[in-house]
Image (cartoon, rainbow, N blue to C red; front, side, top):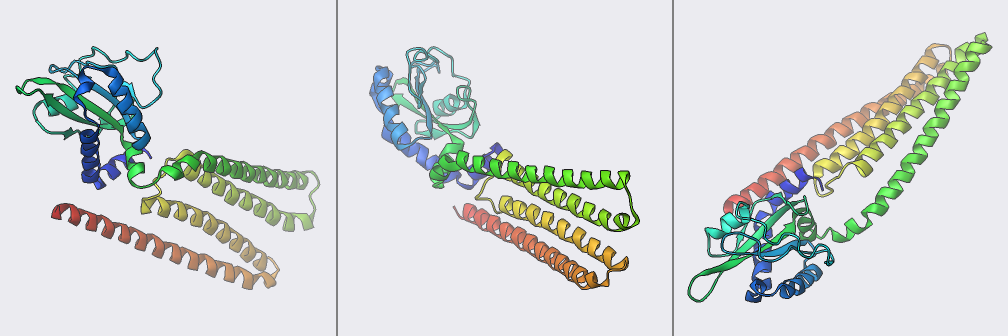
Length: 318
């Protein structure tokens, strides 16, 4: 997911995410964390197994200075075990919010200084029996991974590199075909310049246009596949992303059919009337495809507006 999709999904599922964060904090908290870093490591291993989106865990003193090192979800080595200890975190949003509240607090999304990913933090202020503040426990989660976890998208993400590899191979194959078609068109053009004849001048240009048209359509298909499936980080749960992909594919096919129909129309005008019926049929198919695409885009956009309206009304009710 890209950052825009992550933020949109966060606002869609803000309450469940905050509730989940609060429940994780309540279940993981132990007063021993402020005296023993090993207990933090054990707790992070448990969290990593059950909640793989939990990214970081550490404690602060009552002034916002970090007591423990950064306990990461990654395997901890001796080289980076002391990272973060002694750093002043009093300016960070989780400390400011937790310092003003007695319960579990959850921040809005922000860029983590440790992982450099979009994250949210939950923090809890711990007091002793006399009411004196001992410190704060802070948990960071990777927001994109948390949303994937909540939406049940973890398994698909594991196969995503395989999908990208397959799409990349298909695109390379399409571009190879484009190269062959361009070579064929170039050879025909060169032969027309070297040894032109009256018959070739009438027939070969149509063949050249067919080669170039097919090359254009196949190149556009490969380019669309590369952009949509390999280069862009699509949100498959968004109807707009699926609609955009289908629109681009259909538009590519529509352009190719329209050009081929025009070629057949030209051939029928230049003395081959047998192509006229096929040209008219292809033009009719192009028009029907264009109308169908317009209806699909209109209905899809309208359905998405209705879905967003329903979600907004549910938020208002809550």
